[in-house]
Length: 144
Image 1 (cartoon, rainbow, N blue to C red):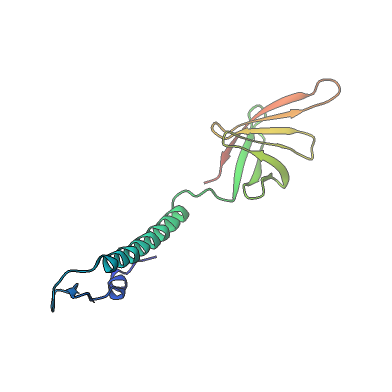
Image 2: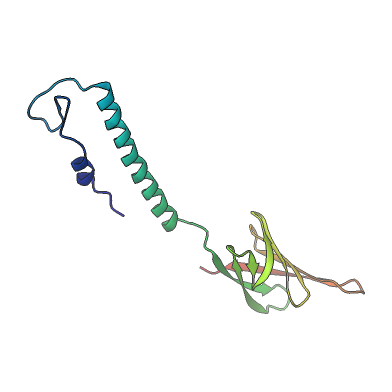
């Protein structure tokens, strides 16, 4: 979104209490009230422009996506699959998930308890059973 300075300056008065802003005509001293009003209006314009620029920058530069697809690989067998993490709904493949800054964990319908380390991409899967269960080590990488 482009900010048009000409439209901002067009909104400003050209003459307040005898002080000419455009460089011609009378010159004089502005009252404190008029100066305050001008500063308040200028501050509002600057604040609006800053908010607009920040909002557009966050959309363009690294705002966390609401959904991310990961390609995962079993380190032993080489088998691969995908998982989809929805950060807005706190789900992984539609399963409720706990999402923190360091890890994402969930319980899937296959009975496995999954924990994904967000920094390393290490995925640990634990399948509990009455005989002790077992764990698998996998690796996941976000799609680009």
